[in-house]
Image (cartoon, rainbow, N blue to C red; front, side):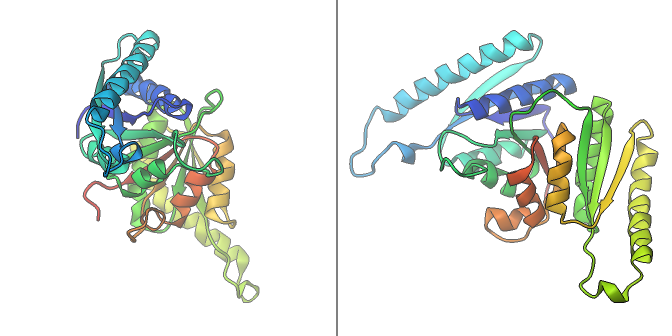
Length: 282
């Protein structure tokens, strides 16, 4: 894994928030920061009427924008090493490729394109759904609250997310709220609900025990509820600096690849969301 945090930017206000978040994280972790802009030629070019100087003009504009953003970052984080890169092609594909060798990839929740009513931009959703490693989707937030939220489920796919969440909480000296939402069966009237509740608490305690032992410095808050996990995580995000979720979908569409919970949290969270996928996982 490389010692760099990559952030995608198109110069929009949403991308500026992502750049600031990525710069803060790079400075905190002692990593390099790389600003990447992808020129999507199809947005401007018509195949039947090619413009010979188009890419040159777009490239010069991209370089100027990246230089402006670099100066902005260096003014606030003077000791941070910053590099830039301009790519041409599909923004989703190019950013996914950059994620392969990065500690994490950071993108804004919305760019310049897309529909005004959309909650999440197509590039953000496509990158979070398909990239390997960790992708952070940033929304502008208020002052830091000193809490990380992690989604916990009964599958092994949440282990990389727990590892990331504990590491973030330790580094930031923040509390870690682990949210585990379980469904009450439709035939609940025939069950001992108190016994069911105790079983869920025992599961969470056993699942977190190795992580507590590894990170005794982290204050862990167990949040166990029977509401839908998207609702639980979205509510918890109101008091969080970062929500961390796993990625365990299986389909070819971004929403299916992400899994319904991660997909829902990306749309409805009130703070940045880190989607953590085990490198090499298919």
